[in-house]
Length: 256
Ligand SMILES: C[S@@+](CC[C@H](N)C(=O)[O-])C[C@H]1O[C@@H](n2cnc3c(N)ncnc32)[C@H](O)[C@@H]1O
Image (tube, rainbow, N blue to C red; front, side):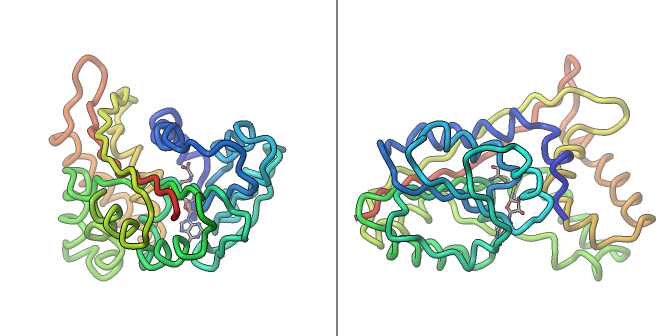
């Protein structure tokens, strides 16, 4: 289950890639704009502000996230839906999907299908994290392989579920699109906050969410302690902050 409050612990750091992505989308007056995996809707609302003439929709499979999004009262139609079932309308001129496709096995096939169905000139803009080989994720994978966790979370803690930017660029140029693809490593300076390691608090908002759901309270507490110790060794604090490098993958495609 997604928890909007935990996800928003590091709101500025999490929203910056969205704005860096959208800065490369040069659509002028799109008729319809879709945000797939829109989360709690604050970022979708900025799409409605940028393109006031567009019909903006946001969909997310989490009722908690969509509940929060609707409470914003922005001019956006929000829906609880699985993005795997989404089909572009004939007037969908912009599709945005930020930090969502890494959760969707088979998303490469979806991208191919959307690229084939979008109207000529439409923009498809995506961002996914590319940090699955970072020390944080390697530590989680090591721990998940341990005897006491393997059965419950061995399958949940995944090897990289995404391609690099070149992989998505190839997929979309194969579909005839003009592609702008890049990668950025942000160095987030996370403030120390009490006894809890800030990277652990970050991971609780995303990668650890399915892990928490699969473990009982005792094993979850053990895993947090073990992972916290590993993270403290990998990401030491300096001057009150922990430097947390975070690679992200961006693609903006213009459909032929
Ligand atoms: C990390 S959050 C990103 C939210 C938002 N796009 C942002 O940038 O803040 C990932 C979102 O993807 C949604 N999600 C994951 N799998 C999905 C699916 N199959 N269909 C729709 N939404 C999905 C989750 O519910 C979650 O809200």
